[in-house]
Length: 157
Image 1 (spheres, rainbow, N blue to C red):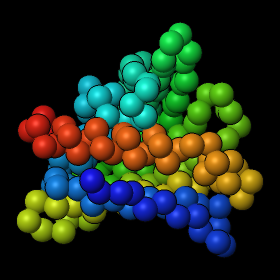
Image 2 (image 1 turned 180 degrees about the vertical axis):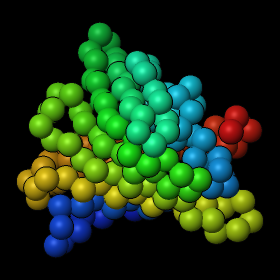
Image 3 (image 1 turned 135 degrees about the vertical axis):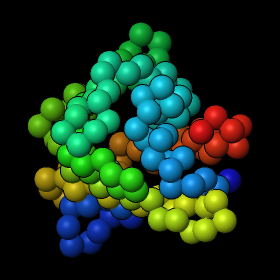
């Protein structure tokens, strides 16, 4: 299994993620912009995600709810830019509505059907960044991307 590199920038309140996939940039872009596909892989295995609304275009917005055992966690944001190999969006966990991250994802074509996903999240403070890192986000990232890898391997993208 491929692992995701998660790094905290020492000078800015940024979290950077990097992961290689046996997929094309177009497949990864589709996985991040198609609401039905996104709901299948996002987050930890213990949560089921449902899309409330999803308009994956520059200027569009999104919201989804992830739940387990009657407990729900909602997230929303705006797509500032959706290109062929790059997404810029905001991300807000509704349980902490004042903490808005600016996220940039881009897909680097490595050739031979492989792509390196890069993502960075800029938050408003080092304390906020460190709280994200301590929240268990790595479990959701690792398990979510493992589900995405399975979707690719199964030919569902």
